[in-house]
Image 1: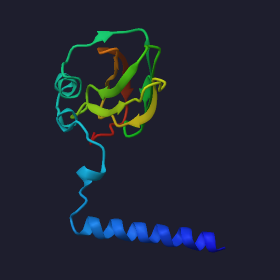
Image 2: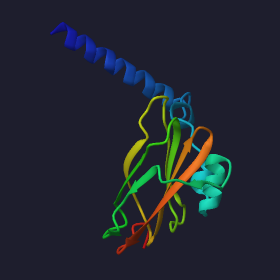
Image 3: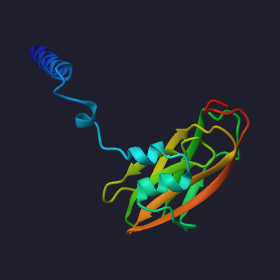
Length: 156
């Protein structure tokens, strides 16, 4: 019983201290959250997003990347996407929707020894390509799949 009370009190004190620090401006979201490639997420074209994220727009097409997405998405607000790769030493995976106003939907940094597998849901404004970009061994590879959207999810 005392252990539960001690755990509760420690948690309450920790949350209180963090709240006071955040309220005083000592902790800002940039300090607490991971860094993110702002230019890539604000880009309006696929090429600009890739330049901001990977340093260049060029990528080599690869059959070692599997993009699993529906052929027809009835609702563009929730499109399930799975990206996997059999490439060795994958360090980054990014998912882009070519027809979106801001094409970069998500970007992931993978730890050493991590399986190259991402499953998520993205928004798509209209019919277009879902592009998976994988960085492996210092090179950038990609694969595409077209998804037809019947009801747009990005204001469409």
